[in-house]
Length: 184
Image (cartoon, rainbow, N blue to C red; front, side, top):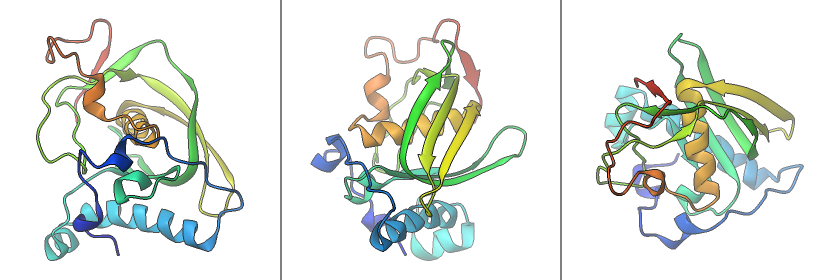
């Protein structure tokens, strides 16, 4: 079971590396890592397990955050309609996206970043993501709202990009013109 101590913190060089593709079909070791990422996110949202193991709640986690520079992410969250998005993917890619942008009204946070970075993070309002599940089967997802933002955040980790890299340095809380504001 992954614990909070397994998550590396901002400033660690692995967080700025471009992660390697995972060979398909995935090895047993890679499958276990992917499963453990999703397990952490699910456990972190369970108040009893989270307090028992000192887990900080999260909705997504990428392999580079546990110092594994491979293209793997896990996401577990509900959209504004209560639909569950629970995915663990190898080699996720954004294959198309909207011109329209969106951002979280509360800003973004990250399990690898302990300090708060106030500011709006511009993201695509809608994305289509392709990747492979734990069995190496292709998955294609059309996403909007919070799931879209979360997947973009996690895929950024695979490219060595942190959420605060996107924040307007001069005016972090300036509303993003024409973008959809999403309440979390």
